Image 1 (cartoon, rainbow, N blue to C red):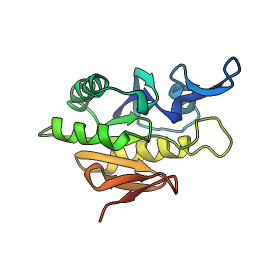
Image 2 (tube, helix red, strand yellow):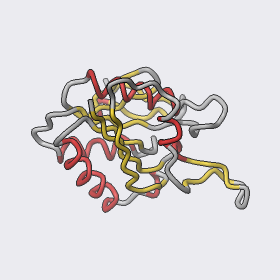
Image 3 (tube, rainbow, N blue to C red):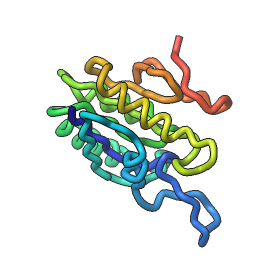
Length: 166
């Protein structure tokens, strides 16, 4: 089975910059973590689209994500790695712009970057790969061992998690 991963940046892709002393988006690093996983009968194709903190994303950036996901979802499930702060906003645009979707489109990210101690990134990536195989067509948020319809969730910043809307 083929699964597309579109990387857009966010915390999941951040690294520590010794020059600035900050955690920043520099380059995609999902490939390195995919190599650690056992994915029999799964072919993962990674397309790095951008590497931005989601708070810096523009409507033009979201339209680029939509255009690429539209193409990729025509042939296989798609996972979009994304910053958690505006993940739901991008997801709602995808849901509105992908009428007649035949594959699941999953958005995921991390509260702590991949490679950092206690990072949730690899767990969320792994869960998203499984979800891409079993969820029906639609736009989903998969994070912290939970699945949410993108239109029925929000980020709870106080508790660093996603919650279902009532």
